[in-house]
Image 1 (cartoon, rainbow, N blue to C red):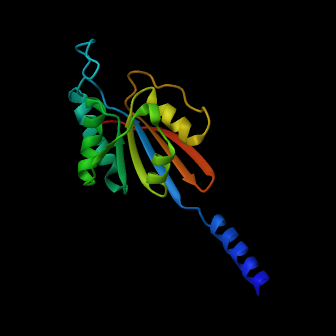
Image 2: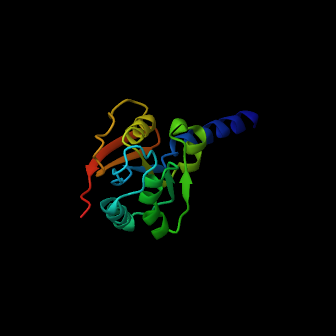
Image 3: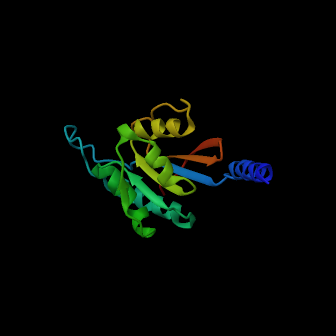
Amino acid sequence: MKKFLLVFVFILGMLSSCTSNETTTYYLIRHAEKDRTDETNRNPDLNENGLKRAENWAKYFDKIDIDAVYSTDYNRTQQTAKPTAESKELNIINYDPKKMNDSIFEQATKGKTVLVVGHSNTTPAFVNSLLGEKKYEDMDDHNNASLYIVTIIGDKKTSIVEKIDSH
């Protein structure tokens, strides 16, 4: 009887490890266009085009079930994330780009669909961290239209980049 129980527990363990194929999807964007009138301002707001783009991101994500919205703690990233978060009735969760994709983040987002708003250097770095490889370089400083989509199913990780027109 002990052998049977041991074999049963072993098989059950093997089956449960094989069936952990839940899907986690990350949508990663850079903040929308920022106000560049004061080059000394390290925390500018979005300009008029940026505010429109932020609204258009919310429209883009309208038919996508988002479970969480993450943003760095800068005016421009918060303002980019806000319309989508509000339309989904979600709070924006701040993250530190120096501590991205840690075990706490992985556990909190596993099996979910998540929007992450960052910067020209942190967004590709975050994607690379999720993928476990250096696939993407920093974004051009005027590129506010790239959407990185990372899908993780079990141990399989894929990514694509799309350009989303703001109009």
